[in-house]
Image (cartoon, rainbow, N blue to C red):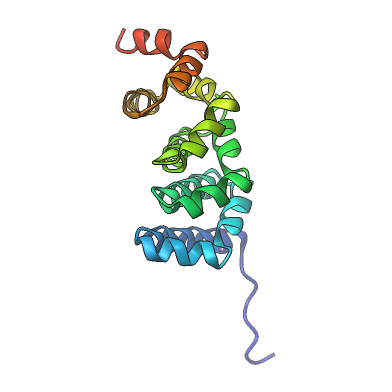
Length: 178
């Protein structure tokens, strides 16, 4: 019939999703836009994307969530409620996960923890340092470097430092570069 659209292929749907996520990533780089996305419920849609079977979609969702959350308490708290930190730590700890997904999951963790004592406390309570140690044992040099940098730049309290040490961060750092 006239005016009917041809069926959309799975590849076209995937490409459209990638393009939409890339646009959203560019959009949330502005702090006001990140807050608007939060207010409109966009974090939930991104959280659902973390369950995609496509690694490139999961990686871009982690990156967007990390950027949106960086230094924005309202966004960080909502992301914590939605389980984003847990999903990112799971991806980091999963040696079978795609390397780019793991790298972007670490970026997401960093964004969630930036200037957020609440998120840092949740991270320590849920043994988040173990996921960082797992990232440092990756075969991907870039992942290891980013995990080491994460450890070196985290401003942690004495309790957090003790949790990091208990998770094996110190020996992992000592082994870096060998």
